[in-house]
Image (cartoon, rainbow, N blue to C red):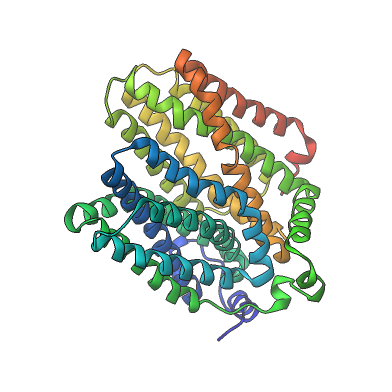
Length: 423
């Protein structure tokens, strides 16, 4: 089996830069990564739907369902940087293998328990906790493996395909999971979940092996404890001004967006739009369509040379559009604004991740990606807690505050000569 260096070197030597994101699927290693990623993403949604219906069927309590989701979310957040450090130590491929194997091994017995009518709530809590732990290890590995699978000039194309796949899983995953639950039962949804992870494991096995020199896991780093490696990752990310700027921008924008969209949008749908569940589903669907279009377009268009200006533009783009959602009087213009804003997220998720992967030392890929995910998701509970009281008083104010935070981020980035000169 080829090593990653051999795969990347041969690709760089024989292949011309690819303009279409779909042509990257001609690469066998990338195709295996794409299939493994798709199976994992769809499996996640199968499990989400199955767990939600199982808890409601067993208890009828939304409160207990929320507690199950918290049990899953906490270890994912707490252990995310440990997962990134482990991916750097063991290689992303090995970390993905272990994560998918554990998920398949734990979900399959749960499927049997549900099918035989012997499942109990403590088992549901246990599997939710295991899922949270495994996600903390799998997610940084999945984000950090791409530079070792494709040539450097194919990073944007590869990330575009993976981002489009992620958006497709958001739209189709819950639908397929719900159809399985409705047509065959909760137990078979868990069985399909286990099968998707088991099949994904096969595709991860087919990925190129990684040598120690590629990862940078020499004897000194291998002897270091995970705590030392995590501290090294934090110092590395903060000392690089480009990565530091990205982390701050991600934290500000996602904090603002999560509060406005997670709390403010349902409030508008229920109140001002008076459109029921569709008042929430249509704008979110429009956001997903826009994000898919943005990601796909980014695979065709070369990345901007002045990356700092792209940060400024995307932050301002999102700030104006998100703030506008809180001002419009009805559902259709809100959905239109959400769709246009989604284009920006698709673009930045493709170009931004590719830029980070290209800029980051291979030995630090897992840790940097785990820090990026923490910047994106770590403040979400705080955003929800702060946004609730504001939306209760005035949802328009919540959207204007969120948009203002993004515009302030854009202004701060534009005022910095260092940011403007980032390439």
